[in-house]
Image (cartoon, rainbow, N blue to C red; front, side):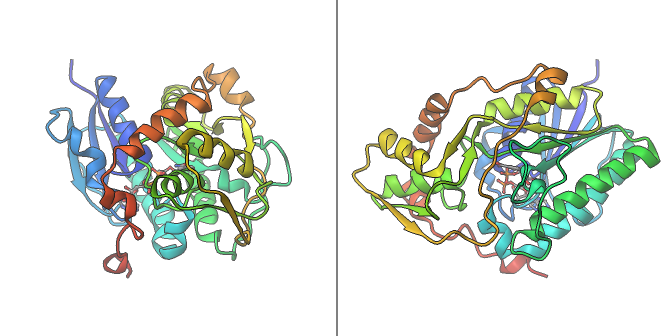
Length: 329
Ligand SMILES: NC(=O)c1ccc[n+]([C@@H]2O[C@H](COP(=O)([O-])OP(=O)(O)OC[C@H]3O[C@@H](n4cnc5c(N)ncnc54)[C@H](O)[C@@H]3O)[C@@H](O)[C@H]2O)c1
């Protein structure tokens, strides 16, 4: 039997690279696509000698050409951390608008099923807690995070339009904060930020009074949820995340305990539009996909900490990921 082919955009990123691993493990031929704007070749270096993996360096906001059949397209290309999308807001808007349009056109052309990586950020700073899929959100379109949140809302809208108008098979996953190996220490998200500071012997920076909440999902759990959603027949958005909520202050205490750092927490003002609370309602995923997270935070953090500890001192001390100048048009 011919091996089925899957296109994964954003393949050199944190989540994209884990998805490549999973689809190869499931027996698919994976075509990874990325322009490395926030990704890293190292995340897929272990796959380059695998005959079931091929890589195309390409900016998905430009027309995409792929020869042969495709069974699935998973569109994960997009800057995902505030530190990235605040620096490259226009690329962020383009990858979820033009990029999603290009991927949908390709899916239609290949008769492939399409899955878009959406986000809990479509709920903005939520007024409903926990967030159910039918909550329409509280997003500031012109605030600093608008470039990401509105681009993802557009991505959902155009995906649904292709579903209803062209009868394309589509899936929408709303991903909540996820962690695990291959995150960047300097990507500005709280988990790698705290661990990086602990490893470098710096104080842990806490924004606001630390009472804001987050819920963290281990990457293997997330990938399992996405895989099940893709194989389901459900076209409406589905939250995938871990409902186990924690305040950032409590989370800082956990990191101090895990790493054994002697440093303390220092407080800085909360950035504009920073969501005060975040917790997925995963009733739909539980019922429809028979999915719920399996990895508890203590275990997930131990594995992730071991990964960060294995990084070179260059990676540990890198402040800027890269210069974005060559990408800015
Ligand atoms: N990590 C999370 O907790 C989280 C939460 C919600 C949603 N998501 C979504 O999941 C996806 C992946 O997030 P991540 O955490 O892996 O981020 P990441 O930055 O590690 O990966 C994104 C990848 O997309 C690539 N990319 C960006 N623009 C591109 C373009 N125009 N052409 C080709 N490649 C491009 C980057 O180079 C990078 O490799 C994103 O769509 C993000 O919005 C992630």
